[in-house]
Amino acid sequence: MNLIIDTFDYISNLGSIVMVPVMIAIVGLFFRLGIMKSIRAGVMVGIGFIGLNLVLNLIWDYVGPVTTILIDKFNLNLSVVDAGWPAAAGLAFATRVGVVIIPFIILVNILLLFTRQTKTVNIDIWNYWHYAFTGGVIMTVTGNFWYGLFGAAAHAIIALKIADLSAKRVQNELGIPGVSIPQGFAITTVPIFMLLDKVYDRIPGLKNRRIDSEAINKKLGIMGEPLMIGLVLGIILGLVVGYDGKNTVELGIAMAALMLLLPRMVKVIMEGLVPISDGAKSFLQKRFKGTEFYIGLDSAILLGHSNTITVGILLIPIALLLAMILPFNTTLPFGDLAATSFFIAMATPIHRGDFFRTLISGTVMMAIILAVASYFAPIITETAINTGFQFPEEATKITALSAGNWVAYLIAMFAKLKVIGVLIIAVLVGGVLYFFRKNRSEISETENND
View 1 (cartoon, rainbow, N blue to C red):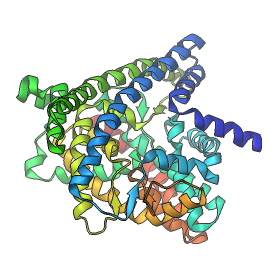
View 2 (tube, one colour; view 1 turned 90 degrees about the vertical axis):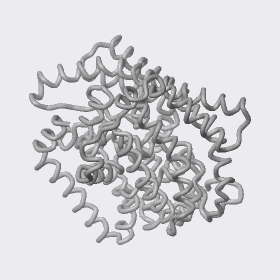
View 3 (cartoon, rainbow, N blue to C red; view 1 turned 45 degrees about the vertical axis):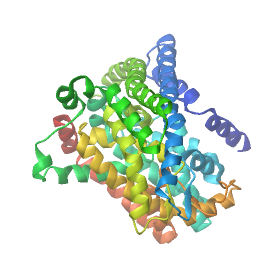
């Protein structure tokens, strides 16, 4: 048992840059793509993710200092510190549930695939930390390892089903075939964005209007190109925080680079995934007629859409303003503030690239995230103490915006009821499986129409 735990602990420490190419190559071999083609596909996807991470570092390198200055300008003095996703992930993997989460979730995924309850093969192993986080906080509130493991499984099952539901929209908007997004936070935003999308369809000003990146390009010409939008946004941010001329222009160029390079890195990932997708279709058509499978990836690939990055940058000051005015908020956005694009990554495919819908939904989502992160803070703080987590300087309570998802919070609150809570969670998860199975044809038809 110790050997198994040590093995998967080692695997979790490899990170996505190593694990994703390995898993892609394994999937390619499973679908009889051939050794060399499978390795090439895995390496190509790995290169794409390395490039994606290098470009995303621009956000932390250039936008991170901007957020610190904005926090000072807003004069925010809140009792709970947002420690950020790296802290939340480290905390999650440090719990007893986190130690066994990788083999456990793989088994859950395999079981659902064999029983045809999901189409998603979730190879985004690093982001299993979201499920570990859910299990870890449940252990904190119940003191029971098995309740924690059950809660992690519930989160993973819900994630796989929502990944199936949103897969076609993700594929259509990004132009990447055969993928879905089962990332533990991203899937919790999908029902909210879908509900808001239905609301927008009933608002006269938004009902028949679609303003996406293509429409902006046509209307503004060169100034509507993503790199020019990034340049302007960067310069505006620099002026707002009081940068001098040199630093303002540097920030503008960095944001322009972000807008130009991210989509190109996603294209590299796509180049690696297309052979896998084609091989999977060929393999499955021979053995399972009518069955389709998706490769579950990190929501980071969605940041290749210019709409997502543009709205994400605009949400930084909006999030700080919300933190200041919302009466229920106790969280000081900090560690995850530069990562706002991840919080609305699924809004772009759900709203079909519409800028204003994504911006409105992003504002609503940030308010929800702040609320859940604030309510979660005492439990996260206690979990951190139990795992020996090193608190940020002068912080007595911590949380993470990336951990502020309502699914984890809801499961944790039900788990507090112990046996009764487990039964409620089981009924809810069973209801999700039944609903999607019963309405599979209707959902597929809606996705195809979209």
